[in-house]
Length: 299
Image 1 (cartoon, helix red, strand yellow):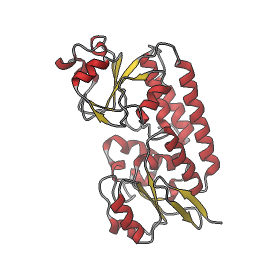
Image 2 (cartoon, helix red, strand yellow):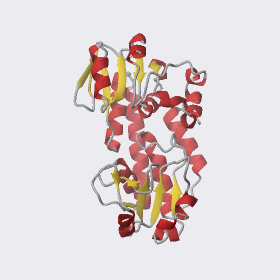
Image 3 (cartoon, one colour):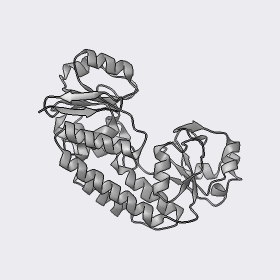
Image 4 (cartoon, one colour):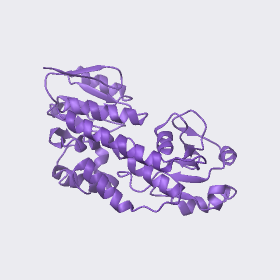
């Protein structure tokens, strides 16, 4: 019996049997495959898995990564078509925006599952589709149900009539943020807070003046190796902001643990809620339990 799923392009992908040789060029998608316990089907990984910030986690999940023996034929900005073809995959997972690469791969007769994530529902769809493609539907359903339940626990636990406003700062700079139609906005809603950015765009550049107009209760930074909350608090351009004056500036920790394009979105939601409402939590214990439930082992 054939397997059919519709990817994020709206294109139906049909396989005669579960995928056995998968080239995955998206790190967040790879994370989902490992959550399903299907890493043995992976024959190539995205190149950024070998970056310092991610390597130590994946090295614990797959001995082939720890020895750097899994090939890495590309990621979001380049691919090696020759290397991909030489691996003889029966499925390639890639960003839907990489249209030229997709066309080249499909011309070789290799099925492509294209991904584009704009919401938590998109993350659930990706995991459910992987459940079908890798014959792991029971595990996929269980992970989705568990994550939905955990997010609802957080949302209901911090729901209030006077939510804190949060400005989310991306690593590119203080004026880079996300608006209402974004995964960031979903994350803030779950955490019992509201997005200070009232624009609609998923990713938007704003002026310092606009930031002052919004004057958020707190600022949450995406993880940044070059900048920390003290740098933001000390920025002379930001001294009039309420969040800066009250030193309510926080940075999400390691990207791997806070990746809200995966089912790990529950962890940054919990962190933001705890910061917003001064609710002490045991971050290490929460991480331990999350990794155990998602990956079957602590990391």
